[in-house]
Length: 430
Image 1 (cartoon, rainbow, N blue to C red):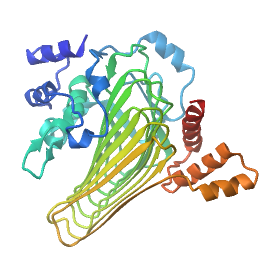
Image 2: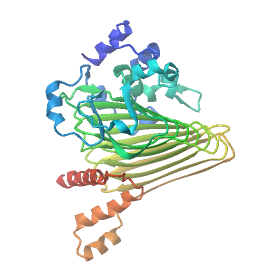
Image 3: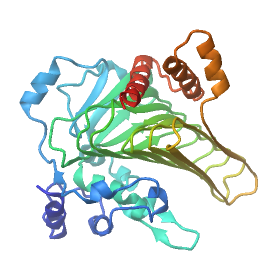
Image 4: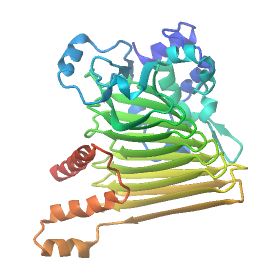
């Protein structure tokens, strides 16, 4: 079924999979607007032309058995596997004793009816309030689309559970049709006093993947979350990560964003002593773009946030980071930092970094900074004089540049190295 046909059915009240927590009229109204483009502040550095030009198909059915049988022989250790956006227990290998429950979102809401009030249900939830007074719902377009097309899965970490092993969230895709839109929708709930480390990896994306994660970290809980994509995309990835953090709770988020990808991150420090560390690597090559928008909103007293980004642009490509810090009234004694470094590997490459501060409280500390540059030719010459080949010297310097933000997670170093090596291999091929 085509996306336009699907939306028209819902307009006429023909719900294929009704989600009672959604405000359908508001969501449909938002989707009927144009797809965000460079006129929208949060999307000015990422072209959506290639999305607008395709008559997208909606992938409603679950993956076929033949695909599951072929993939089943190669299970990833301690994993939660999604195929075409659907949770797939046949391919997953999660240990039952860890204290993680997985269930459909509708089932979780049935057991916890009040929870639906916390979920995204209306574009107004994440609308941008411009200084002019205008409320702009366009930045939430892709969240609305995901919520409409996906029924959602809940990953719940039980109260008081401290999970020391890394848990892998794996996304695989079975459909070879490049004109299909896939919508993984995951809700992560870290109950009180829990602790967990997730590592998310996307494989073989040839179509459009519109990913949405909504995260709730309750009192005294800790979440470490890393997200990577394996290889260069042939398709497009639009991703949203929205996180709500309670008192004395912590988020440590690490992102690697690559070509043809747009990441939208929104973190809400809702209560006292809440903490968010967000760091990431933004890579681009060829003529492609890699763009991240990250907004941290301080609502609780003594809340802290730290954004730290590294950007690498090669060939004729563009990287960009828009890091926004909002400190609301009464969020006293809050502390917020933003810093980015951009590295340009060719004369035609470009990079943009835009820190924004919106401070409505006096008793706070805020710092921001951004720097841009090329590889140091003197250091490069020195390494070559010691017998190191030029390409190897360049890779050494870039590894040092990347390691400043500490992307490694337990058991994931090989993934990071493969990822970076693949990036350089593609550049050298060209």
